[in-house]
Amino acid sequence: MNGFEPRLLANGTLAAVESKTLEYKRDLSSSTRILKTLVAFANSAGGALVMGVDDKRFVVGVADPILEENRLTNLVLNGIFPHLLPEIEIMTVAGKSLLIARVYPSTRRPHFVREEGPERGVFMRLGSSTLQADEYQREELQRSARGIAFDELPNETARHAGLDEIAIRKTFPNRVLPQAKEVLRLVTSEQGRVLPTNGGVLLFGKNREQCFPDAWIQCGRFRGKDLLHLDDQQELHDHLLNLPEAVEAFLKKHAFRAADIRGMKRHDVWSIPLDILREVVLNALVHSDYSQRGGPIRVAFFDDRIEVESLGGLLSGMTPEMMRAGISRIRNPVIARVFRETGYIEQWGMGVRGIFARAARQGLPEPQIIEFPGRLRFVIHTRHLEFLEQHGTKEHQVVHQVEHQVEHQVSQQLLPLFEALSVQERSRTELLALLDVSSTSRNVQRHLYPLMEAGWLEMTQPEHPRSPTQKYRLTAAGREVLEKTLSTRHPEDSKA
Image 1 (cartoon, rainbow, N blue to C red):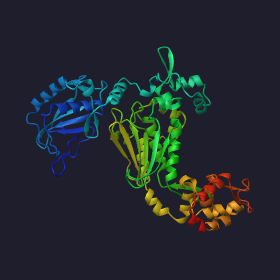
Image 2: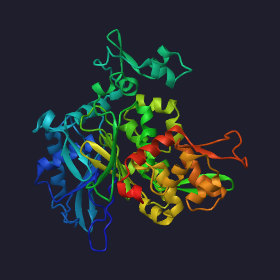
Image 3: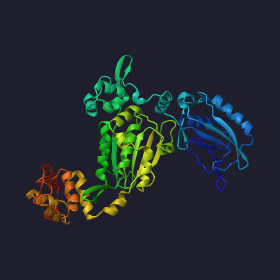
Image 4: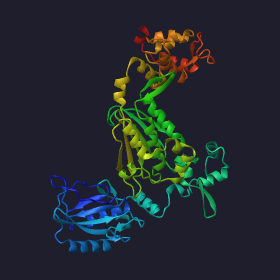
């Protein structure tokens, strides 16, 4: 956190670069900036302010360290409120004296610079920058210092609409409803009244988005590696517990899938790491700062990566390095408990440390955790394009076209198969011949099974799937897709 160790590089500069928990100063000449930095350390994850180092990380030293130590002590005593007591020490590096002030995360936050006041004088650390805290961040600092979570607080606005008790019973069928609401902290007592908590409203509120307009997920598929070409987007408005599957369905819609046949079983291989992405989306839902306004959780699928961005930076005391090491703090204990009780966290709960470990095992570049003012972004790198190059055979393209066709229309490659089935039932040999692939079990799994999974094709003898007289026919949904496709064909396509 703030364990600065002065290691010199061959060129004479200090090895450690400025970060969320480290800043260099040449001297005490800029007293206001020094106070802002110390306040930001105390309000964030702690840190070390090292004086006697220039902008290029060369050690220039402090001329009179004892005098400067006294000056710094008086500066902190008179310039910061509530009072802050950093550890100040003098260290010799390369024959020169450095003055180091070490600050730990404070339980008396938010601290502020007296001269700026309690609203303008609160600062936080974001990367290697010191930024003024906004209203939401100041409120969260106050809550966290008192050990209060936002999602445990009562929500007066939702009192009349209440909670969706049908959804609660469906989620927890073996629990007595009043006890479940109380034990899970979906409700709380406030001046003799039972009110929904913010967490209860977020999870099961009848007027959830009226109370929390940003409590939904925006998904986008961008062609290329930037935001210039939006290919598809979807807004997901549902109970929080239903959103992980909805996000996964959107990602699968735009990912590629190949079939790995082991023995008689088919194993799907995807072009994106779905197990990692599930955990990242879950992390965003559980740790998003729903007290803020500023946009929903966003999932952006690019050709080379997928970004998941949520409201709220890291909680006070946390750094990206601590997250990678497996250290965790829960922003929303009510939401986290319900996700755990329903099996989400048990099923997917590998945590951030597991995300990095799985990425390494899969040979993917290391994920990134990036803090922005009021937002946190996870970047998960993929091999989407490499996968397409490796598996983009004719057979794989058929599978992809079957499952992810735009607006559920039949591709030109599959159209002859659908037209043949619209006339009469066909055997698997006849259907695979129309696709120009051999009549093998593997090709049945690759090409016919996806059609059945999509609800467009069915067996004539489903109770005897291996019958030698087995045939296939279009379902009502399959005929609807075919009719839609034919109605939108260009005249030249019909002539062909």
